[in-house]
Length: 146
Image (cartoon, one colour):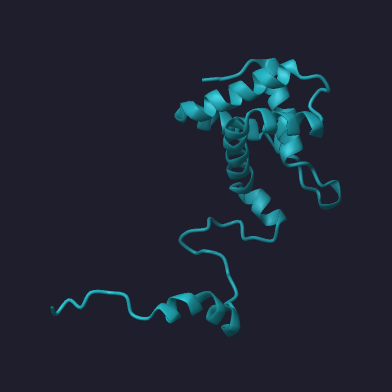
């Protein structure tokens, strides 16, 4: 099912291109150019909140002057922050979940699970700093023998 008209889809692609712009030097396409609107359409068919959020943003964008400039996108975020956040999260999910895009950023093309990605261990001083409040609190549990 298609959620948005052809004009709205063109506008959505332009907004997505602002959210994740292209990097021509590294041969990385923008989100709209990559077709992330297809991902959003599929997600919106499963999530009426996302569909409503994107539709509200598109309706607001149609009333703003300036095409789909960075300023217009900032205005959308200011006017409809909850809806904008839903769009932004879904856009990131669609873009960065693609194996071809993960490879552009030096992350393996394979899914995160079950193999995962190599993460270097934290230095001991960072671990000590992170765990200091817990260690200072001391034991905090019930003795099961009682």
